[in-house]
Length: 50
Image 1 (cartoon, one colour):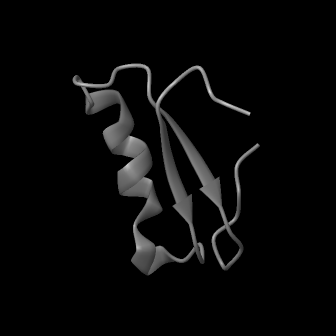
Image 2 (spheres, rainbow, N blue to C red):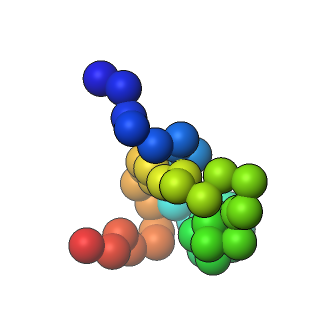
Image 3 (cartoon, rainbow, N blue to C red):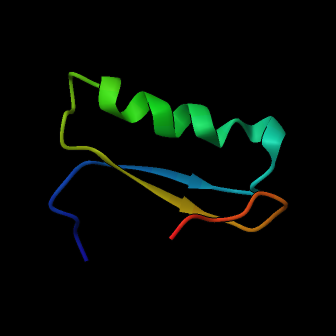
């Protein structure tokens, strides 16, 4: 299925050293692709957020 919006995908282990928080915080700063969404897939030591 095709998304209606450009998608940034992170697939990997969710750990502090991966700095996923920086990816999430950078999303609103993207002026070239303002409708982009992030898909984060993986398991690890960092808890997910509903």
